[in-house]
Image (cartoon, rainbow, N blue to C red; front, side, top):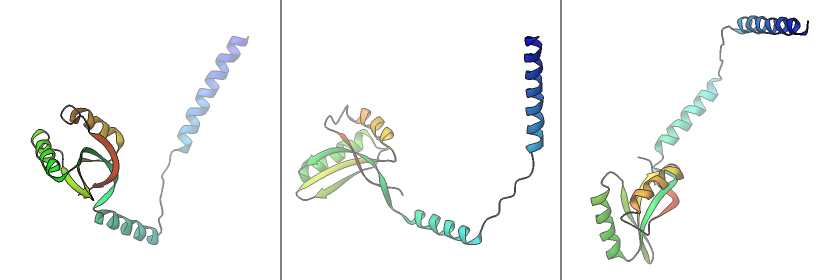
Length: 130
């Protein structure tokens, strides 16, 4: 008796749910306010005008000017597809590479870069987005 009641309950539940799913299907209409569309458009234009944003770079070197230019040249030869630049922060020079949006991508690049630049580290900094 209990088994037949359980089977009946299961079938009843299954048919009830399928009927409910059929009844809830329909057309969805989204109404928006023109002012909201205007603000979204302005925000998109502003975001497109940005030149930098927060992200990550791999710092290859920190020291004197002559060695910074040598390290930059060496890096360009080994990794021509990764952007690299020298930054002067008195009194030291930094060589930083890459423009990574997240730490995971920067860490992946660091694994390859460390083979040739053992002192390389990942830094959170502004990155170029153009």
